[in-house]
Image 1 (cartoon, one colour):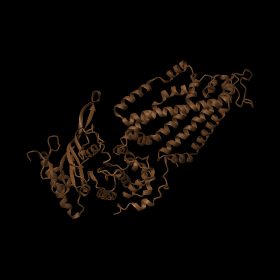
Image 2: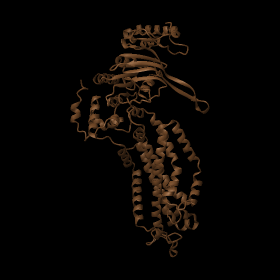
Image 3: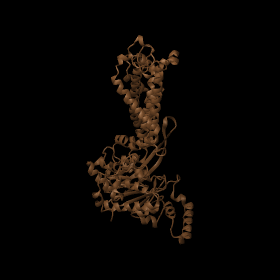
Image 4: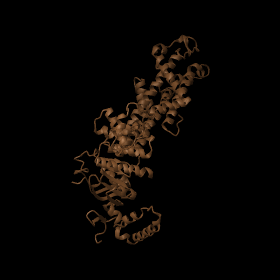
Length: 309
Length: 305
């Protein structure tokens, strides 16, 4: 039994217009995405803006309606409304924007204790100690439980968001670009901290990001999305050392190299990838510019290539 | 590893004595203290309210509205502090009772419109979609009703015309503005990540609506309700002045004012209408001043304190 399994997930948003606001078309935000995650691992979901990675994450936790497809969490079908298994306790989310994801009118204790109040019966005192402990765990001073979110910096606020997400000891955390709103010096801090609590609490991450450097640092497996479809999926080192799809190749080529001596080499490499992209575009994308279905090229590595190859 | 050894600092923490950051109430208080005009207005309001409600306890309404033909149009004296009107009735007593009535109506109408408007607007805005659509059409229907005409009809058909029935009629036509305002704000707030986050944390929807979204709309509610209060205090006076308010047996500020329609009274008997006019003016101005201070308190950029 897989820990989290997504099967042919489709999320379409209707475009309404014309007479009586009829549905005239739909945006295929996510169009046939399948992947699975093992417990304790980090799965990186990468793609440009609008590629559907955030929508996928939000659909798994139930913030977006799923048009078709299945999501299994520990064998339970989350899309089956008739059974209504309550797994919200086991799946939590870290939001992208630490400024809007904390209620500005609530004190830190109320924010972090919100999940505890929903699922656990604690006395006022127990709750306070628990929240102070959580804050201590994310590296904030426990004395700040009575402060308001606006009294913290972006990085600190994101830690409050993380404290709230781990309060119920969830099994899966969907991290939706958790560091893209933070400045670079704080990013590493938050990421390393996320890795540490992963080990400590045996967490599984679905790590959504557009920053390949960060994903490389965090993930065990990576899926790359483009226009709502998967382009390539595989172990982290497979994706980075042996990218098969032209889109992945371009992404990898775009990672900047810090060593200035390689500057010329990098430039030539990027240009060659660009050339390849222009020449072979139609080998990799269909008439609508979408990726083909995934095909396995090894046990763990699959690429979206046309049937003939 | 630092993360694992949480305990010491937490255990040593004296959890009861942590300094609180200033809450909303203390920010409002600071703002009012900083704005002298608002402070004076607030003191004046509290003073008038307590005086009016206090004194009216000791006044005998029947005594005040009794017609005394020997005391018609008396100027202010030690017997009649503010003189008498054309029926020989004590103006001071009428002023006190009238102010009390106006204030009661103002508070009642503001509270009821606020309650209905906030609940309606919050529900429509928070749930959105079809619910919002239907609720807003109902609201549109109320808006197109001709307010004054219906009030006049009500005044003539309602047999016992009391403060409560007056307030209810007014409420029926005045809750739409605040409902619209709250709805638009709630529509904004529900899309923010914190409302979505609450959903993922397993908080039921009604709890998100009242526990998470409402506090973020609260500043808007406080400000609009205060500014509405200013308008609602004058509401009764306006209608009474036009002749659609309370009958003369129920003293009100509007009735006193309407005596000024008689040119003789307007020119020679200032004591009948002047105090009422000044009182209405001051009351509405003070409530507004306090409201403006509250408005500033809710917006950190405008704050003075």
